[in-house]
Amino acid sequence: MKRIIGKNLIISLSILFITIAIAVIISVTLIHSKTLNNSLTKKNIKNSDKLILGFSQIGSESSWRTRNTQSIFEAAADNDIQILFDDAQQKQENQLKAIRSFIVYQVDVIAFVPIVEDGWDNVLQEAKDAGIPVILVDRQINADPSLYAGFLGENGVEEGRRAARYLVNKCKNRSGDINIFEISGTENSSIVEDRARGFREIISTNSKFKIIHSENGDFLRSRGKEIGDILLASNVLENGNTTNTIYYNKQKIDVIFSHNDSMTLGFLDSMEAHKINPKGKGTIIISIDGEQECIDAMIAGKINCVVECNPNHGQMLMALVKQIARGEPIPRITYNYETVFTEDDNFSKYDPRGY
Ligand code: AHR
Image (cartoon, rainbow, N blue to C red):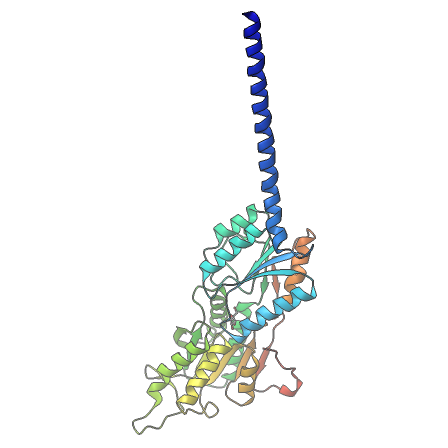
């Protein structure tokens, strides 16, 4: 009897031992395959040992933007950095999705152009938790600064100040009110807010400068034309002719301040459609970006001043990506070089703009 009980005990212990051993083998296999799967995800998109940069662009609303994207691709190729690219087609929700997919792919660095200022905290926290550094390009955000490594782009406040300084100087001998019609870009974007702030800071030093209307043209040429069409319809007189003076709510407009070249060009398209000669107009036109087409329009006497916004961020971005990959900190803010072009410049000394 005792022998039977002993035998059963030995059998039970053996079964228990075999079960535990199988369980251990299964869990070790599962843990191993999860690691393999993760490294496979990264390997799938990796050519070699190149650094991988996940880059989310907001779209292609202007020639400026197209050049901005090109510059980043060119510089990535020069620096042997692989890009995972996403075009958000002007939607923040697409940018959020793109950033989340970069996190899943375990890219080395994420860079993105934030279309608007707010709503980034959660996704940036996710990138931080995954140990992936983030660089903001071109536009800034309202978020805890510890959630991203740094910003690279233009100084929007200074661009606005430059536009206003040109105007103040141009009108230094004029008395009476100077009425300004502003065409701004994407709402709740840092660039629009910065340019508007810098512009107002300078014109507010003289009460003759008055912004009589401000309208959002979404940085699009089509919207610049639309805004022009509505405004200029009132310029057509009863006899079918047009006046060269532009009015808004019966107030004469002295200045058009447009936040980008695309909208300015759209506005010029509308002037031409309404047979208003932009050369003979009494309106000062100030634009921002520095696209070749706008510089040509300035040479032709249609625009008075173009404040440069430099889209060539590529080489500077790749330098920052490599710095981060070496484990070095990057500056909180890196500004690109920018200048101002005016109707009085000698254009023979300028190289083609390239955008
Ligand atoms: O954020 C930069 C602005 O966005 C440029 O002025 C404009 O052309 C672009 O669409």
